[in-house]
Image (tube, rainbow, N blue to C red):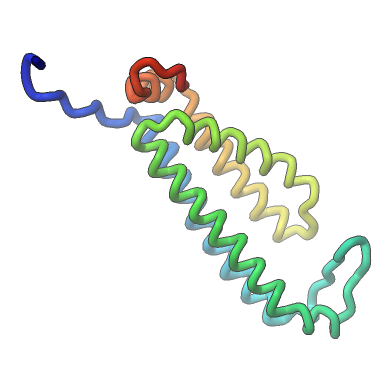
Length: 158
């Protein structure tokens, strides 16, 4: 029989709280990027788009605009959902959340090479730096101790 009521779990340390704030900031930044992208999509003739190595004409861009908009919205909403989901999971001490955050930051690093245009590169680097800062916070010693404390007994989760 337990000696008393179970102790409430310790609150997240500062590095984890900071990482969660950065992740919420990443979600907000992604939402802003999505709004800006949709604004520019309304004036699609001002942009060039390359698909499979071919420059699309203005007529082709106008024809494909609904699909391009739908894909942009879907990708943006998925990215926002990932930021929020991982922030919540990390704040609760789920070890897999910091591992997945690290993997996604690595993938974002690879994606930087394919960004074209100053504005696109600026926002991509800003989002990448936000993710990198969050991952750095999640792997600090106090955060590691927090995640270990929250790991289920008998597991070798980080």
